[in-house]
Image (cartoon, rainbow, N blue to C red):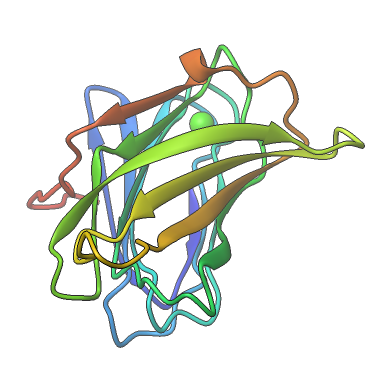
Length: 180
Ligand SMILES: [Ca+2]
């Protein structure tokens, strides 16, 4: 595996599954690159959306790879409701790889966690497919219009993605005593 990161990176191997964990702390410049290489990999990222300048680029390599993406720090700003592309995966193969999103996202405001939903949008020219997730501001009151904030995971070169390729789970970042 290859990892180039300003994030905290931990690597381990469990039952022949290579595991890469990228944890982007709130104050840290991110924009990590991780490449699982051959074999079945689990690549986990923990991305703090608020304050990030650049985002992670992930490559699974050959094998059946599992991308577990955790996000935190989602803001609800009516001027900037879309966070844009927050993670790029360069070689996602539907039916072989799995994209795992959390059930909820930690928000930057006082509203606590917000449930997320997602939709799949394939580019008109088939050059990528976006998985766009969204959350409704949990702090909104019934008297104001709640802001929906969105962010995009871009799968470069991927077509024919289906909801069977994307699952939502109660993700927690792995914590191991790492053996390199
Ligand atoms: Ca791999």
